[in-house]
Length: 456
Image 1: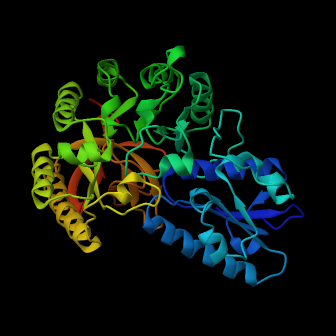
Image 2: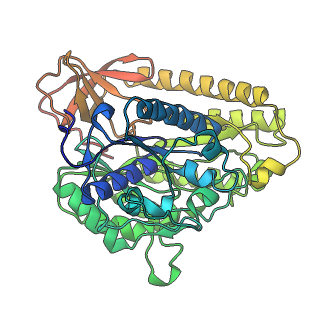
């Protein structure tokens, strides 16, 4: 795709950092700017405004933001009249201390989360909003899809009321606020009508959908029922669910759905009851094991993705080994591990027994290396099996990069299909696994068999 030609209209370039939720915000920023008369360029040298939409959830995310802001300011220094905008979570993170504003005084605008749809006005001289984050998009919000045409993220809520003791999300994104069900369904229909074949539902906790509006009866289950009715050849993927918020009604729906992929992202964070309580996770080991057992029994072929935090304050060697044993027992198909990092303003940062960073890093490496070995063994067991994949792209050498139902975009692994010049991005294709490449799979097309993308 070529960048837009330089026009008389002001031109912006945007960098989206962090998770898919942040990417949706970048799409909303882009749509709002275009509604205000700006044009988008994929080449920063053709732009007048350089926007960095940041993540600040972890130290690594803030380091990445610093690098991107520095690159933007270097771009600014090369021509007069250029402006740099920093938006997203780092703007909220920095509100009290002003650490990053002082570090980068050359930034022209720090745009708050609340001003996603006011970005054009801010660039025109309007004052940024004050107060806690409370913005929530709707189907009427201008949005420029920046993902592959056949893939879109559908943000159904923002903020969080879970108040995990290690997490700064309530400070960065505010209290839970969920969209009206009708608004989500209308946006989903627009996306499907435009050619989207995989809708990925995202929020800090999608299973909390409707919890801020208990009187109207809307829930994730009722939302999925309405999305299920939409016409079109598309699938739904669910990201970021909370183990304490699953209901029997939701599990029964997931077991019978023809659209929702058998893939669930359930960040568990730990398994020790003592640590779960200290984390304020609202769930016990027994409840977690009961939930996972119920899900496995109800949804054949289910892929479970989870994440864990190691090195949480006070985590003993015995509690770490308990976690390792649990992971070995549950055989998660997909998993991430993070060393605990103290976040200012969170209760966990003030807890006794802070674990040295090098210990947390070592524990994360041990657990993740075991998971990688487990994934490679599982991949070898898939050789010879047939599956349906969705093609994300075909490179110049003719190799298609695709995904099965078990892999979320830009998070998990891929299926590589050599000699796939006749394939197109967005195609559903039936393939047979013929080999592995690390944690990825290698496949060849097969004819005359319909496997089903995510078929149970």
